[in-house]
Length: 196
Picture (cartoon, rainbow, N blue to C red):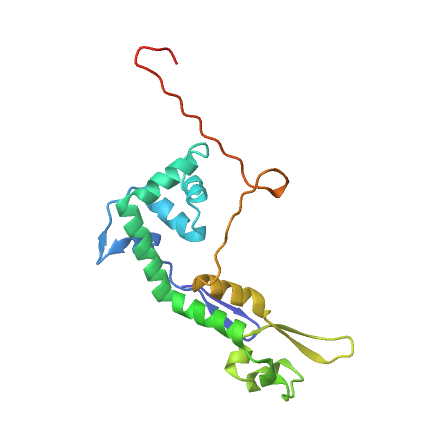
């Protein structure tokens, strides 16, 4: 274990973990090749199968099809799901927590800070938690006054609305000059033996 000291803060590196640890269930390793394990690890980085396949050592020319094929593999899907569940448990980041945080950023009441005297970052602790969680930055203006920057509500409301199915992306197709799309169907009857 390495310990580094800088100023008065002490940092201790966490113990090294075997990256394959997340790919085992009840201590029994899954039947994946090293390359497949690497794909799972890389897929968890950005959830991009093509890039994960490239980083795992598959050919860039066939990475898209390889990534798709690997994601259809039941053992790989299981390994990904287990690793995601383990990471979620380890980091305590769950879908519920993300939704709750989005709700805080979307639904805070600015009136909760209207009468508060906020002259420095230390004063932020005096604010209600719902407002504190909506703060995305602070600074001092040209006159030296402390200012808070709150999360814009619209992007958070948009994400919540999409999650709840309130907004549906729709694509409309139109013909030339915005008119309807012209379609036609040609039906030809051909007698057996006649050249068509």
